[in-house]
Length: 348
Image 1 (tube, rainbow, N blue to C red):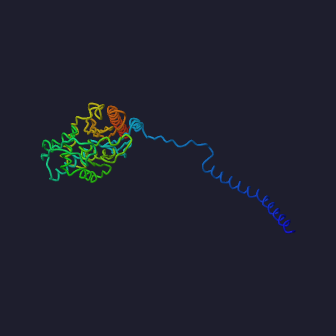
Image 2: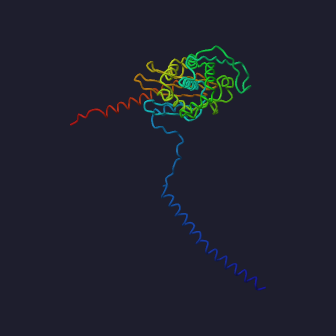
Image 3: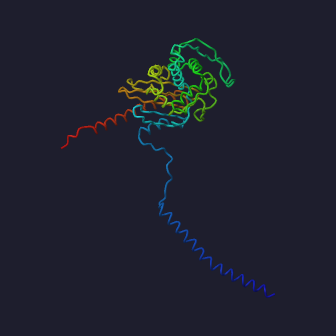
C-alpha cells in the first residue's frame, strides 16, 4: 500500500529534473543554430539575391545578331560558320543534328573523286541514272528504281551539285558502294557527326515521317559544325587532290538552285560555291563565300519550321548576309589594329 505513493513521488522528482534540464538543452541548441547562421552569413553575405539569369550571354554584338536571326521559336535553326583564314568559328545549335537533305551530295561527290584518284574509276566512267519507280511510302526497305540514260561521271557530278539531280546522286551513290562507303570516307576525315542511311529515292519517298522542327531524326543527318568542317577540308585541299577539289568546288560555284538562300543578299563582288537541301518542313544551304580580297568563310545553315518554305529561305538569306558582314567587320578591325601597332613611332 505504501509503495504506490513512493513511486509517484519518485516520478514527480524525475519529471521536475527533466523540466529543469530542458531550458539548458534548448539554450545549447539555440546557441548552436546561431553559430551556424553566423558562419553562413559570413561566407555568403546577408543581402537578398536574385536567381541567375537563364538568358544566353554573348561576347560580341556579332554573335548576338546571329543568335537573334537564328531564333528557334518557330522551328529549330542550326548555324555554323568559320573564317577559313583564322579558324574562328561561330555556331548556333552547331552540335545538334539536322536533316541534310541534298547537302549530303557534296560528300557523295568527294567519295567518288577519291576513287578516281585511286584509279578505281575515271571522270569519264559511265553509269545509268537511277530513276524512282512509284511506290507507297514505307512499302519497302529501299524504294524501287529503274535505269535511265548512261552518263559520264563528270556530268553526273555536275547535275547532282548544280541542279540537285536525285537520279544522278543515286547513280554515284551506287557506284561508290552505298551510303556506308560515304560515311566511312567522312570518318576517315575525322568527321563523325554525319550519317547517310538511305539512297535519295527512298529518302524522298518516305519523307514526312517526322517533323524536323520539333523532332531530331538521327538518320540522314549531320551537325552544322560537321558540314563546315567538310567545307573547310575541301577548300584547303585536306581531303582531295587539287584536280578533284577544282571539280567539286567548280560545280558548287555553278549551283542554280537556292536563289533565295545564301546568294540572295550577297554583294555582287562575293563569290559563292554552295549546295542546297530541301525536305518536308526543312530548308538548308551550305557553302563557301569568298571576299574580293581573297578571304573566305564556310557556312552551314539548316532551318526548320518557320511556317513556309519562303520564310525558311528568307531566314537563310538573312543569316548568310549577317555572317558575311560580321566576319568582314572583324577582319577589317583586326587589320586596323595591326596597322596601328606596326606604325612607326615618330614621337620625340
